Image (cartoon, rainbow, N blue to C red; front, top):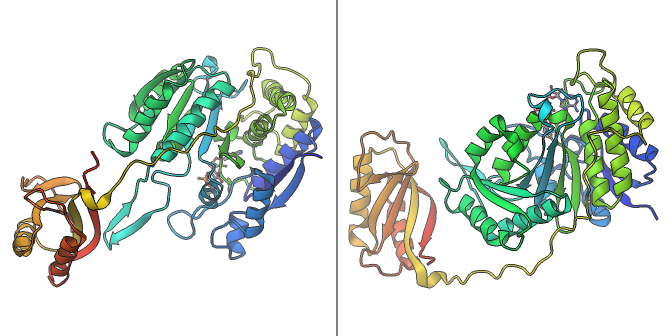
Length: 467
Ligand code: NAI
């Protein structure tokens, strides 16, 4: 029986580039059974808050594989992105974005034949959606990075590198500033790297990585990043080889995989038969390899390269006689079976997402290690008054005011007149004799803050001594 795949054509140009791709796959002899479902704009319009209807979820649960066009997401208001929902729902924790120079496609580095891949953590970090207005004037977002998430993405990056015959991984982080979150990715990478002696490894700061990509991109083979950094750096890498219209992507998990073009719905050209289907075609090529159809994947990839090399292109790539989506995909079909000298496909091996014993969670005994508490308050008082009121408030209880921070800068006990303050104060209390802080101590403090008109507390964080 032929492989069943969930098909989500998507919004805007989605149906056009997906239909073009399906015709090419069929012409290449692939008789996949498509189960067409919806997500994104159509689902939001039908009143599905998540953008992913139950029928779509059930379909992917059954088929385990989805091919997806771009989905519309409202910006700055309204529902959560259906793409983000799908990634989280199916735990597709690895986002893989190759940036490979295609023949004849104009780019700043066209002569270098760039060939690199960004592997991006896909379900954690600043994209969990844990974000809120802490006060009417302060927005807060949680950067959540777990040891499990780091282990998953690091192992996936090494296994992917092996399957695609790649030799080196750069782990690109901001561990110099975000020592705990980004630092966890770096240290996990270094721990696991010893198990893969055949792959060369290096660490690079993400800002320098962006800089190096712009001045010397050939040094990169695989670049591994946390979610947001990877989001940005993978768009940058696509830009190096001619833009989003030619860049494929996939989201892989242990059980489910979702293959999607990286570009959006392009509302400006939707419904005009102008869209470039190359990104979607290359995405389908990745899917075919993932499913073990290596020969067919090579044929489609080569057919696309031969077409581009002959100068047949859509309007985003050329001003001289651009062709329509339909004419372009017909040309690719006509070129199936031909190969493009000098642009040979890599030798790919089957890639299976790594399965391993779950990480043993670290010993953690909160009641014995709480050494302090941070209470975040809103207050209109001046710095001097915040300090004196908070100190007074704590004068009759066990915990004492140890420090006050404003936007991360310590403003008490070391005061600085240079800092401009906002009405959002992080007040740290500890037992000055070094005793363990009990929940009752925290409640006592909160009770006092609550009856003080000058302060309004928003959230509380215990401080643990972990090691
Ligand atoms: P976009 O990628 O849709 O368009 C940016 C520019 O690139 C436009 O000028 C467009 O015409 C052009 N373009 C994009 N893909 C093309 C293609 N295949 N062929 C020819 N030209 C192409 O990005 P934009 O405008 O920021 O987003 C529009 C919508 O798409 C938004 O709702 C956004 O949330 C969504 N989006 C969805 C993504 C996904 O589902 N994976 C990814 C990015 C955006």
